[in-house]
Length: 389
Length: 142
Image (cartoon, rainbow over the protein chains, first blue to last red):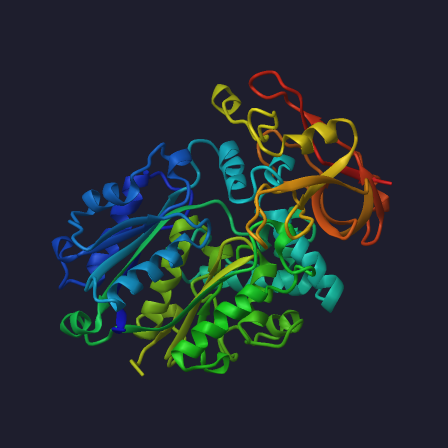
């Protein structure tokens, strides 16, 4: 199997954007090509686009071809769209990686894009219900917030996790986002602000939730041979894992505060990378809701099971702690344009491991991890290294 | 809004539309049923037309109790989809050895708690586009 590395990355401004679906593709593509001046669109052999619901928000399918044309890419080895709900971006990265590792392509772009705020705010939330089961869950009005709220309720009942500890995730990630000009939110937040924000689904308040956001992100992935000709600072793909517990809520682990699929995906990625959780310097984890970051820290092995509340409250997942979790601001601070999220996570690890993250730089970051999930039952983990190993 | 009226958030439940029609027919008469695989005898929830254990597609309908207890619940106050009002109670229930997801309708909010008893309360929702009645397997506090 051949090695592969990120050689370029770029992100659009995330937010409620006065921009079309195609505008967002142009913005992320431009930022990505700008990061890798040696590559022109015609040099890119493949394109994978992570995008969840353009049929509803842009009344558009045939997405990879649209994006290829918009960016001047003429795919000769790979062209595909991934729809895997909130994990679509990272699933796209895995496809690109597999093609490169197999020798079927040398340079592939993975782009994630979502125009979630169209056509109306009312429909935006209704559209999110397409990610849960249409027959057994969504007809009751179920969308993501109550799913994760159920996990939070079980985590509080099982481990004594408190609302203040959940709120600390919101404080940390909003404050990180204040240093990220591309984030949806730039004002930061205090513990009082988070705890006094509007209740969404008990116990999750507004500032503990990711917002509905427009945005796009792109990365360029190259084979080792091609990467060496393009840059002195490739960011190596060291490991990857993906695992499924189930789709419907009732297929998951009975206590909902335990996500065995994430444990399995993480173990697969760590084994492949030859590193353990203690060696991870910087992690972009899927904090669609504060409880998700707590459970992710546990299942990824950053702390023990049930200990994530005190772990985050003590600052152990912040600058100066054992691992910096969500330096770009996470989904809570940056927003969560579904298909773009996994790619934006990879873009953050790209700048962190190249020591190019500016005000957000994690000192001496050498190993980075991304965790992207689609619902509570499916998890995708990537591990990146500054060194090839 | 004309545009939103085109969106139907409920399943198509008639015999013409789903192999699981019997579930909805029973629900309309107040019974909670599910499928049992005729080959490996696994009882599923929710009902299914293909057995994920043994790959059989032959099944029979069996009754589940119309009551259970709350395993986890949340009250959603804001951010509900268009057409759904809050506060809305979502719960994972324990029913006859299965975990069942449902909304609790007309719930006694003061009685909500892990372990609280609940009972089936079939909920009639908008008819399908052909005018057939539709029901959802909602529960309420006992």
